Image (cartoon, rainbow, N blue to C red; front, top):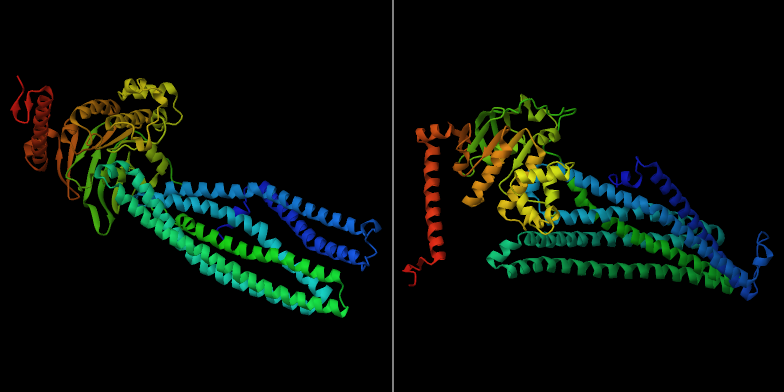
Length: 613
């Protein structure tokens, strides 16, 4: 509850605080009207109808009549209902503000967490945790303020009335009933909370499997595993079904137990009152009054069970969200960290050691190299050598274990992350686009760019002609993760986005490795345009894309095995030369296969038999 107080009493919104105050005031007034007026009017109406009415002197004579008493009673109910609605209207903005603030805080926190966290997360489960948490906060804020206080007030007023009007014996029976009812409700609700947690876990698991399967729709289709995915989802839903059924069953037992306790307590009090009516110490109106008070008491009793259940279930729903908010940022700015100041844009790695964890060392040999301002340096090597790790360290997605990564002499750990990432452009191997328009995805590089600047960037990325032929042009939707576009088209959008950003430093992380040879050559010409005059770090798998680099660094097992220009490394006849030879052989084999396929399509060769005459 300590975490919830800022949302119930927002320090930065005095207007909302006043709404809470006024809502509480109307709530208290409505409860006083509800508790005091109807039961007494019931008593007076009953005595008036039975001829036993002896009203107090302060009651006006025109209210003595039974009809007027009935009208007054219903008028009090209308006033009480109006006050309740006014209370709810005042508090609505407080509850919704709390939901928005918590959702915003969680969203911001998610973006501040490290890359390590996001690589290990389960998107579907995470989205369901946030969805349940935002609903839970509204429930808790509303029920804590609007129901807990009036329920306590209602119990107190009822106890005072019974004690002073009918004696301590009635108070003891009522107090015992309330205590036993509350104890049973709390114990039963705690039992139900464990079932609720199991239901939430099953719901999260099912949602995770559903979203993961739908995001990988093509892979499911490639392997024909629709039935397998359906069975996995159904197994998760079966566990949810079992937990949900237990939840409803346990609610039935809870309601039954509450009804028994209250029914027994009410029966005892009514018998006591009936005996006094028979003895002449109470009027029939007193009997009706006590019955009305007990019925009034059943409302807060039902509410105390409902409130406790809702608050506990709300806490269960939001506990995972608060656990998420408690996850510490792995990479944080130093207090008062200045913005990165770009002079020339030179990059330097000095004796850098890094491991993702103790069992996964990557850069073990103390990596040192420099990318001079305006020059291009390529990082190549076998898979797992640590090539992409270099770019992640430059972006400061992780901090190095030892050594320094600096730009223009400024350690990236000493500058603000936002300014660091604004200075670096990235064209990755797998470009994932937002499910929005082409214009939005290009403009993402610089959100304040004009339409003319967006179109110019698309032209430089050699994708403008393709966009213009689309029915909706730049307003065309790219689909989930950009799946409506081909690999080459997505890469051109990524290049246009980087051109628009106009960063002084550029990283090309295997930007063409997933493309065919023809598309690779077209994309490479666009990359040459965007890298012109910029400090460029190229992480490459295909060596043909780095021939023109000013320096090529060859990584192997986390160490720099070789370095030099393309010609120097070929003359050295080491790892780079062997990689080059293998790729040349693969390219030649691919070209021969392409020629065979082309000949087959032209009818020159068909299954090893000459074409028909």
